[in-house]
Length: 481
Ligand code: F0G
Image 1 (cartoon, protein in one colour):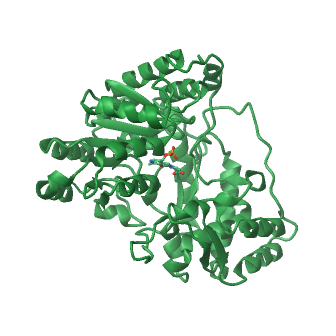
Image 2: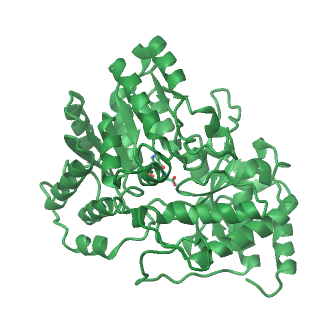
Image 3: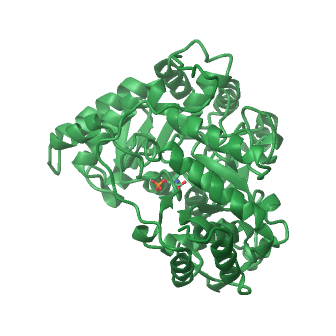
């Protein structure tokens, strides 16, 4: 692992790329930020991108592409059937994961849809380390139930456990001994999204695979965030520290039966796919791909994106590429911790996660604390984060709120997009907001969709707290945007 140390002893992540194409950003004055959040019904998905200064909503589809990816896109082979671009990606994936088949799918949730359609029937259960929103929605749509078996440390906001994404293998073994007939498959998510981008350890994955295979149950990996998990295996797992990223990737894949991914994340482009070993499921899944996604040599993706994914996946095996995200996140988490702002620790992948349960403890869960914090941060800095808390849950069958186990505001750091001074700006505005946290109030739904309500829901503040934040900002930082 090559490192670069600063002579003056500072520890700051150093970009290992240079910027050659830029996109102009606008920072609206605070009064306009207030207007825009009101027009968007306090739901940051409903903002226009042009009104946002730092878009920390997600890393999905917004990672910066490399010159090599862009060059590959120019030589894509456009064909409905038999595109060479597809065969190049298939070969790359075979080389990386060593699996027999690759089925292209337009994005991650497309993989989840067809896997659930094929494997989940009413009454089934799907044990997993932790759910992801779209995964759970598809399993439940097919009549299945998600059983979360995250290790107890996984739900502790501040901890020094290096592998909070581990599944509780003892609980899994007990469950499978009792209920194996009802288990559709076991799902393990790399870089566990909803609990702060936290990784699993190699030993945990190996034990999980052994338990599944004892019962002849498929181990399915959601590899959308595998690049971050790889970084943590390389840097924190004794078992992996002397292996190359390629060797770690292969060792991980060797334990799984099916690997699916969103290439909006893994591969730094846009698309997705399912890799699997030879089994009687392959032909049935192929039929579902053709029915839902497109022909088997594009699966709903543009051939240009297919080329970009193939190159992006190779780049994921370069430590100087995959380390950039987690190192920026660790920097941001450490600086916020120094200032007393509650954040999820240890720093994970994907983004810096603010602990809304301690940031705004005065807001009850039913008033969506993390969503309120997200709206407040947009007013304070033109920064768009993503609520990962109670608003992202769905109500139970009786219409009661399901209170999230963790109430987080995720500030995603898409790879190779932001500079250090932009990160410092985000740290500054979060710190200002923390000093003024008592001004933040709750939200209520004005329009609540039944499925994945956080995407399209319309909310309203419970008082004039948003105006108060804008006014305080203007008086604390006069003349500043
Ligand atoms: N699985 C995981 C772990 C994800 O993080 C995502 C998407 C998906 C599946 C679905 O993939 O968006 O390509 O359909 N996560 C995005 C995010 C949306 O912002 O965390 P998709």
